Length: 220
Length: 350
Image 1: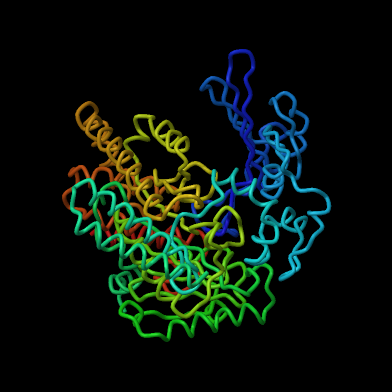
Image 2: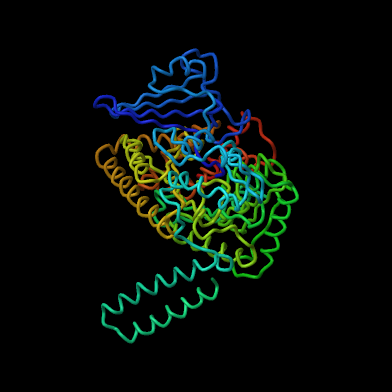
């Protein structure tokens, strides 16, 4: 709850015929002890290599289904970065992950990354800039979605695979979307009625659709 | 008040009954993220705006409606830290809300199957919880509460992007659909990772219940949808339901295989757990979770007729730190907790 994503980064690469997946997670080195709150509810995991500093970097490497796990401190993780097959960034975070998604850092080429000017532009309603959003990983208000629209769409597509909502809409403030959906449902019923040659029912449905279309016209 | 009565008062309504597929699916949960139009999202809003959101929500709840009469708004700065932690352990609020109690609130229905967090990451987080695999019913309830609130509150909504949320990962439906499953047999036959990885490939999130990213404790996992935009609510609910059913089938097959091929080993594990749980005088949370998982597997397989399955499921909740202290009625030192935890387990399994 509340947490948008794990501070985690996964990279995939083909090395010859091997599929290598490296997943790195960075935290504060404290593991919650089974939801237990004793001594602030945490247990410190120590670095496997130096056994001296808390293990804040957790790396899982899978090569052809062979999994190895390493729990290291930042110093040792950086030292063994190349050995683990990926470049380690010490301040890796959810925000960076978002930024990576925005700019195609995760190996996905993208020409749609926002320009410098767009980044500096502030939302006229709340004042948040696109740069702020990249830093904190959250938008400032509903209007940001409209203001940053073109810059947000590539991100939404990468997160959700889509940029268009097809679900519920509020009854009062949802505009015409609810009626449009009802029309869609009625059209389906109409086609079925025609297939069944139930022409009386089809005529009724057609009238209903026309009435709803008029409603939309009057709203728009 | 004696202990059984206190326990009875403390347990949320949904945990006391077993739902469909209850031997494997412990609970179903729906969460809807909603924000008010014309108000900055909570992380970007000042105290005055946050207070206005609480007031507007309170006012929206004054509207008469059948489900609503039993709702109560609690301000988090009006209760003490232990009470807040009890709410977290009952899954009614998130730890986020506890870390930042000023200008935050939660609306709870008296059976605790419904809770609305105010000023968490989003202005409103409507949550419903039911026993077993009842996601359709949990969604219906959340949908109804959402309609009820929307009758008076203006939501931040956009025809193209749907319900607008502070984090773009929740935009669209704002819907998180999740189930809590108990998969001990898959764990024993070393298949659990394979099954869960397969769920990851089809767009579901899986994590251990206690602690993100850590290995699961007590073979409890949470399965939920990852994507919230581009699918209808019914589709998202349907997807989690049908994939959960597949996981349930896998777990059932593994349980039958264990009973058939390694009955003695299974019985040994279950009766050892039963023995330790009913005789120990000190139990850490970690050990207790493992033992309860083993016992629950045995109880559901009919190996321990003296124990009600629901009693074991209730214990997963009752042994948690804040709830434990609430039951005993005072703050407990870590070593004291192990003692009282063992005591409550013994009493509850009688």
